[in-house]
Structure formats: C-alpha cells, structure tokens
Length: 337
Image (cartoon, rainbow, N blue to C red):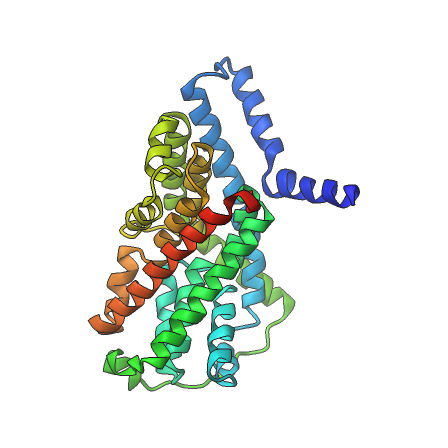
C-alpha cells in the first residue's frame, strides 16, 4: 500500500504538478543573483513555473482529448445522442461534453448544431453546461493543484449540474424559446469519413495548436493575476473576502467570475494563488465554474440562439448550481484536502 501511495504521490506532484520544475526555476533565479525571498523574485518564479507547467499540460491533454474526439465528430455525436431518451440522454450528453475541450463560446456552435439537428433542447443544454465546465483537461489540471479527490468530485458535481439543468429545461418544455432559424434549419446527416491513425494525429496536433493560440493570452493574464495574488495581496484580505469568516464568500466569488472570460486553463493559476492565500475551496471552485460557464461573451453569443426567457433560466440554473456546489465544497473541505 505504501508503494502504491508513493507512486501516486510521484505522479501527482512530480508528473502533474511538476514540482521539480519549480525547484529548477528557483535555482536558476538564484544563479542569476535574484533574492529568493523578495516579492519580485517570487512573482517571476510563480509566473514562469505556472506558465510552463500549464502549457505543457494543456498541450498534452488537448492532443490526447482531440485524438479521442476525432472518433466523435458532430454527425456521429448526433447519432449517439439520438439513441437515448429522457434522463439517459441528458447523462450521455453531459458525458459527451467532457471530451470537447472547448470554452463556453466555442461550445455554442455545437449546441446550435445539435439543436438544429432535432435533438431535444434539454439534452443539448446538458452538453452546453458540461462542455466548458468539466472537460477531461480540467480533471488532470485540478488534480495537479488540489489532488485527485477534489478533481474527481468537481467533475462529478459539474456533471450533476449539467444533467439536472438540462432535465429542468426539458421538463419545462422550453423549445419555443429557441430562435426559429435554429429549429427550422436544414441539416445534412453526413457520415464521418474513415480516418487513419495518421489523420487523427494530424487532427489532434491542429486542435492542440489552435486551442493553445486561442487560450494563450488568457493564460498569461491568469498567471499574471495569480502571481500578483500569490506575492502581493495580503493573506488577510483574501481570507476576509473568500475565507471561512465570510458566509457569502461563495456568492461573491460566483458574481465576480460571471463577467470574466476565460477557460479552465486561465483560471487554474488564479485558483492556485487563492488557495495558497487562504480562500475556501468552495469559493475558489465556484469562481472557476462561473468564469468558464457563465462568461459575459458566451451569454451574448447564446442570446443569438435563444430567447431571453430561456437564457435567463439557463443562467439561473447554472448560478444556483454553482453556488450550491461552492457551499458543498466548503462543507467537505476538511475531508477532501
């Protein structure tokens, strides 16, 4: 048992967490004559370490996920979802969202395609919620910061929000609040061509480079914010706003996250810095969920596809779900960390 734990700890801290890299960067900065104890040195170390670590994990994970995704093009996904009905369809749709490494804005065109193909609106909304919130990349990135238990529970509760949200929308018969041009769209049911292993590897490489290009600016901003929080913001400030002394910290974190636009890769360094400064786990994860799922740009894009009543219901379901998840994580923080 001790051997298994040692192997797992090595995987979590040295492979996923890349702690060896942090030590290497610290040694390099010291060799350059920078004082290890200064805030500026700490900020530079945090920025370099998190940027390199997240880019490495991002490229590796997106490549792997995109290779898996090459087996599930939109046409095939539509056929798979069309075989299921009721709650089972919502569950499959939410799970399908986990293999699409997209931000909220990138998920909306697929949501529109699924809806115009005749899939139930509740099923497509389960996909729309889960895709940016709980992709496979988030599982490994969260594991590198918070550990396996937090990462697995995060993905599980994210899927629950997606399934429950889609089911509520389905039960309320909200189809009439989807814009008519989507419901009446003509679509061609094409079978995906047979791809060779080389074709899939090329596709995965292209998706990796495309995703990196899109998220890189937000990644740098996120790491920069994380470096400032980690080295310049007093711990008592973070603890006062998002610690256990503030009963509305989860709500505050959710509301702060909504106007922002980033994906899981851009929020990870901020979450890491907040955890170090004493923010509660639930507040951190609520912030991450709000940023990735309810960003203002994605709401604007979604408004082009659905009417205000359905948009408001979607935002309300996600907001309430995220806040409840935040308080749940606060309650079990001692068990998970």
